[in-house]
Structures are given as structure tokens and as C-alpha cells.
Image (cartoon, rainbow over all chains, first blue to last red; front, side):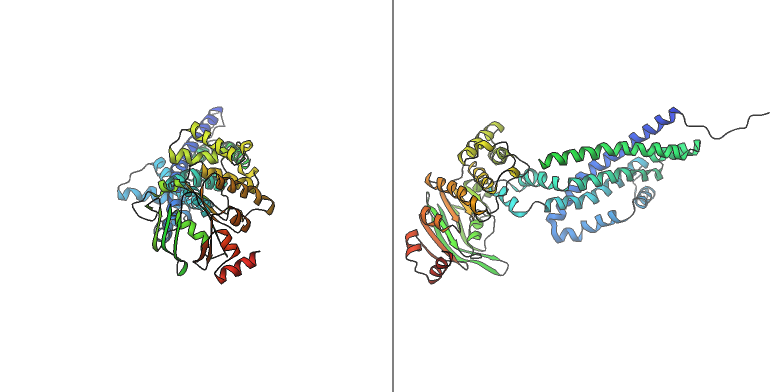
Length: 220
Length: 240
């Protein structure tokens, strides 16, 4: 009797490697977006703080849009419509752009909160010593305000890392997309999603542990 | 020398200082007394340019504090200021608190700045506390730390804005002692204060502020013994 042709095959050790590589891509796209997004977000936060009503009329509504529209919609819109204005970005680049802007929009409000956390008398004390506006910002506001909102920033960073799974809809093979591919082949969703979940956990947990360690040290 | 001419300051519509004329000589200790809201703290903020003024002029050694062309960060190195809230930098040790401005503003090396800081901390009696974070210091110690931090810039004038008002009563003494010590060393000081004993014993002159006007100024003996203004008499009768 002819052997039946099977379209499916079981989970092999090689697949674990495949998932591991995909996890690295998740890490890479996240690190890139979170780093650039944080730098931009801090700049936006400073503009929100200093710009008062001018910022409230210009940059604030734009940031609100990126914070409020679901990420998956932003990704699909950008990927499909950016080429119309000549921006031919692949799935990875599109993902980085949108995740960066999304991170920046979230970090902007965290950063503004951080600046607000350093009250006027403290800043006047710094200025009274002859420090310039920028020296005060860099050496007094940044370390004090930064520590005050650090937990909020860690929350944003971990959120963005998990949300990077949405870039899979553009076809970029990060952790979630890789899992989908394997599930189609092996028909073992429970096993594969468990492994993928474990990878996400392995990426997040060290960060939150390290953050907790830093916070504890700062409290002295 | 600090020269103040016809100084007017508004917060919005509120007229806080109504034409102040005042000279403070090198080496002089001036205490400024008066009720809350009389404008005496605002006067200090106008002297080192932390508050803009609307009319008149403030000159420090001939330099117009509020002129656009003045390098205010440079001028402020001459004017140390100690605030009611001591505002220690919480993320830095006592030594780092004091060393920060000499390093950033005066361009001292790390070693030089730390040496200056250690010297000033010892000066205010915090020699044992160099590596301690502010959160582990008492209010009085933090205020002395703030004094050391200001002194590290080698100022020629010291402005004290109610330096003891936020302290628990038992901690007031150590800060006043430090201020007395500075006065004896010849530091030029303007002290906005509610400590009448300090004003009487340490000052060369005492100024009484009432609703944005400098009502009376003179030697302590005159202000405390023979005040001319009715407001001054009333105020002193109430604080005693």
C-alpha cells in the first residue's frame, strides 16, 4: 500500500533554533525602536514641558494620535500607504518606524512627568550656583526626574517589546510570525505558543529584574 | 557692593516691591525682617536674577544683574544663595552635592572639586558626613550642606532666604551658628529672617519691610530699641 503523503511534520530541535533566531529579531527590532523612540520621546517631553500652549496646539495632538490609534492599524496603514509618498520601506523598516514613533509618543508624557517631578525650588538652587539652563537640565533634572519616572519608562519599554509581535502582520519573521509558521507545519499550537511565550518571558524578565534592582539601589 | 535703585517687581498685577533703594557694602551683614508677603524674599530673588524685575536696577559690583548683556551664570558665582527648603540633590552624596557646581561651572577637575567640597563640608561641621546621601541627614545638616554647596563657589556675597524657617526648632541653632561663623569671617550677607535674636546680635543693619516698601533701616539698636515707623513697632511687638 502506498504511504499517505503528509503535509505536516513534527516539531524538531531545528525548529527551536528557528524560534531562537526569531526571538533575536524581536529583541533587535525592540531595542532599536525603544532606544530611538526614547531619545525622541525625551525631546518631545521637554518640548511639551517648555512649549506650554504652543506645544499643546502642535505636537501634543500628533502624539495623541499615535498613542490612541491601535498599533496594528498604524503598521498596516504605514506599510501600505507610505509608498504612495515615495517611502518604500520593507516590513522591518516599517516596523521600526512605527514602533519608534509609538514609543516616542508614550515616552513623551513620561518624560514630561519626569521634568515636572523636579520642583522649581530645586532648579532654582541649581541655577543659583551658576549652572546654566542646560547644566541644570542635564545634571539635576535628568537624574532626579529620570529616577522618578523610571518605573513608568520600564513599563513602556516592556509593552513595546511585546507589541512588536504586531509587526508579524507585515510579514517580518519575528517571534510570533515564526510561531505561526511552525504551527501551520506541525499542528502543535499548544507546544509552540508555550515555547514562544517562554521566549518573550525570557526577554522581559531580566529587564524587569534589573529595573527592580536599580530602583532598590537608588532608594539607598 | 550691591546697589539697588528704585526696584519695582510685579507678579502679574500684584505689586510686590514698590521702589526699593538699598546699598549693601562689602563685609556688611544686613538682616531683612517683616511679615510674610512683605516682599523680602522676592528682593533676594531679584538680586541674583532668579526673578526678572519690571523697573529700576540692581547692580552687583557695578554689573547690572538684569541687563541682557550680563552673563548671569557668571555673576551668580559671586552670589551664594541658601533657600528655605534646602534642596539637596538627592541622587548625590554630600561631597558630590558640594563638588558638582565647582566642577561644572568653574571647570575644576574632579580631584580639585572634591578637595574644595571636603574643605567646605568640614567648614560647616559636616566633615564626618562626606559619603552620606542627603536622605540620611537631618534638616539642619542638609541646610548646612546647602551652605557648604554655596560656599564652594567662593561667593563674595551670601543671600539667606529664611534659612531656618523650615527647620524643627531644635535644629535651628546649628544653622544659625554656621551663619554667625560666616559673619565673623567677614562674609557679606543679606539674611531674610524671622530670627530676631540673630538679626539683633549679628547684623550691622536691620531693614524692616512692610507690603513691598522698605519702611525702616538702621542699626539693630535703633530698629529694636527706637523704631520710628508705627508698622515696625507693631511688628516687633507681635513677634516678641
